[in-house]
Length: 338
Length: 169
Figure 1 (cartoon, each protein chain N blue to C red):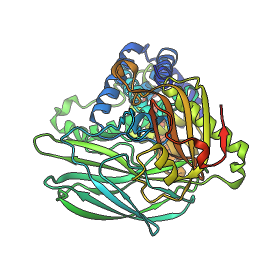
Figure 2: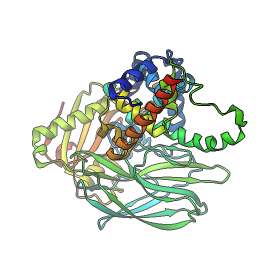
Figure 3: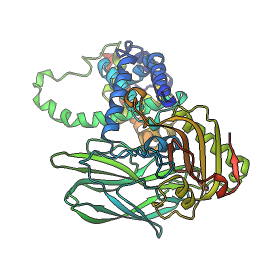
Figure 4: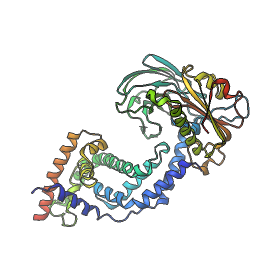
């Protein structure tokens, strides 16, 4: 006997109809999702992300130095050992320190390009890491028992022998997907696990890769539209749906960091062209979570973002209660994006 | 409350209440069991929405959840297979069912589907129930198009034999 496709389709539809109505409720599902999200936020050592909103939620930096700004970097629990990194991609080396408001090293990539990366991971004494994975992520970091959930591909895994204190070198190869579109980005991320009296695991991004936009996309009007769209999205995510004003200036990364950030930790991107965007409004950082668990989330009247001019990847973002110490005009012509 | 939070809760509510039954039918074809189908849909929905930066847009959410269901089903079947290889050894010989005996008209197709390997079943459901093109099925399962065609061909032959057995029995 044979069966043709039409008959198979018909029989499948009849069979599917045997299924009864769902026996779950939306409320139960939403409650489960909320619980898991809360647990993940507690467990994740450092949450990093790629959009302005996500960067602002996770890695806010002081807006004014020495003022009343409130850094809200989410550090791992005290027991979590912090690792530091030296990342070399196609001959360019950038350091990623263990702590502090590290700006991510940004490397531009070309679709189809084969990258050779060297990552030196420094494990601090006295702890050994029971496992460590390095791989490519697409804006999200999470893990499941036994390894990372969002690394595709995993480029290196050290799971058999604990990594002792000291520096460990990994040579990685990654072929950039040929279909990656201009303006999109990927991250080199690491997840590590440790044992002992307080075992745990943490994840972080150590480098950002981005495909540059074509030159036509960098006309002043296109730039203004894109920046405005990015920061308005960030504002909406931080309860500041209607900023009073939005200003932007094109400058170098080191100057932008000196004005809006910590200033000392620029991961080797010092001379890269960036846009420093400043908004005034009422902003609340929820760290990506629902409001009830973030009742005491930090707020601020000023929101800044440093956005790479070639790729529009957000390098830093932060909020504070005081304006910048120096007017934006000192850095160059100011774009009004309001 | 941030817009993202409202967004995922609304999308989840829309999907669970409006498309829950359709998702369950899809899951039912995959696993062939009511309770497992409920579990599969719930697990897929939870996984889709626990990742804050990947909350699917409403239009794409259902397709995204269906892909997660297929992958969860195949992963689960892989884990279960270790037990399945041992289980027959623990079962008395006279309890081993004759395929023809357990097939009735009503659930002949379901039994035929159960006789397929998980990947074959996923291919059949995606291709002939979801009407996805072969290339898309290959992308969902992470295999080549040739492999999908082979799975489909084997599955069609297998299903035909089971249905024939049911009809003659």
